[in-house]
Length: 412
Image (tube, rainbow, N blue to C red; front, side):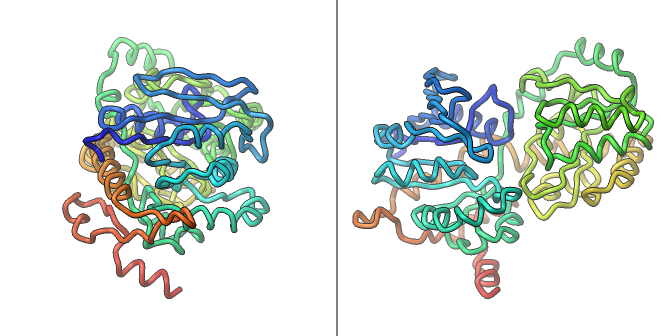
């Protein structure tokens, strides 16, 4: 089917320049896939108007949004768009309850898979009410992609579908972050001074910026926060109340390409996330590609697996400003340790998280899925049983959930 240019429809929530890890992943994946398959992208518009455009030879349609439910965009036209696309394979990016409903209503008769980026963590009432529909959809999926084995093991949903789970970590365009403007880096360092910390993400609760701001009371350095969100005013007020506003610069939204010199100018990257909504932390990869050591938190998600404690940085307990401050100070005070961790961080991205590796794994999965029969009566597919031999072929990252882990989870 690859030789015949299969048609793949990516269905996400939003698309860049809307900032977010999932949005960035969908863009990177789609841009790379179009070299091998026919790709279209369907996402929600931020307005009621529909917009169609091309992004690096990828056709992207933003479907008009009528209203939002707990932050999830409701797009009445999405189901008909899915149906008319007549894709060989539909690839949904979750969590996105309205998109699941639209897919189920679309009558699509080809194969469907999902990337399960995160559980629904905060909106527990919504998650409980939607759970039967989510599970109905997951039973229709030929495969469910997770970005780390740890997330499969700790998810109350994925642990029931281990036979269908495939582990494909995020990959990023390494070259994009390896090319930098030395003049701009010098300007940033001159403007903000030495001992520079950077943190990147939307200003929302689970990113833990409030604890990073509290930590600055005990850090001799300057923090750059890249990103925007509804908590910005609260965070700025918190910085003032802690008498650290002069040590923090809120840069707002910065385009993905324009963040590169900020990463290179910084001494340390900090990810202070506090909930498993932070399933992976793609921004860690961006900083690691720039050779920066990472301070992250010990969440029950893929975050501490991406940057490894005392190998590519330091991992501290979540919700602990003093521990954050201690780890950041340790790195700021020790240039040799920063260099050692930063070099290991770059090597880890090269080995495990290159977008080319992700693409090969994704295309292999697509080919396997399209070789499976579809039950025309139920529009479902047989359980997906991966070839256990492929794990060794793909290096140290686990591509498949092992049979031993699967059996252990089933027995719980």
